[in-house]
Length: 234
Image 1: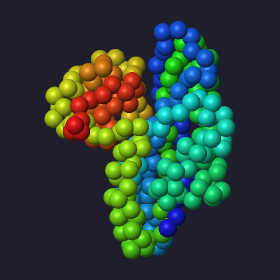
Image 2: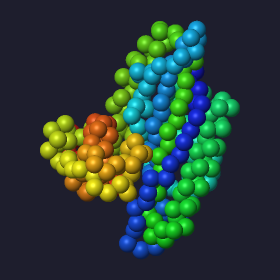
Image 3: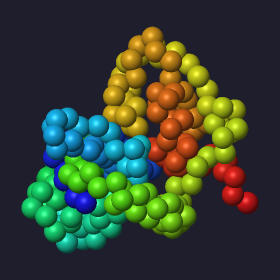
Image 4: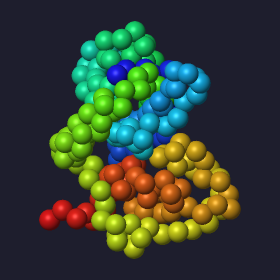
């Protein structure tokens, strides 16, 4: 089985400012990754969504800005995540993808840091499209089993990203109509359009309603400030 990255797009999502000027070595990058894996039909050439994609809908990686300047250190962060979805981390395509993440991510972060002397956290979004190049159903079943077995380990390691309590999502999210189109939903990377319904978390950060509900089924943290929603954990 091979998962081959075919395109990548890195977005600047915004920053969180500190109370005073922040040294560059102390700046953190919050990297939200979405990967769209599709199965390629070898006969028709058409692609369809791969329904066991463990990156759906997104994952959050957090690391120091200096990591983006060092390919070896960046790969220590990225390689385990992408190897987990079957991407060959020794392939030419993957190496090129990591290089592009470095260049685009560092460029976006530097632009933000240059204009935000008190920048504490830099938020970047990364959308990667990839294709599954083998259609062996037995291997698909093996991958599904492996994903199920690693779910609890993923929750422990992925920065505490356990789901918010379902009841709290409806109780604590405030629905409202967007009246000014100058904000971006950091989950889908699209603008909050005037006249559309959005959702505001208790920390006051706003998102598309569907986007933040999907996020909260994966993580109880606000994707911007890490405000914690209630969970089912004791």
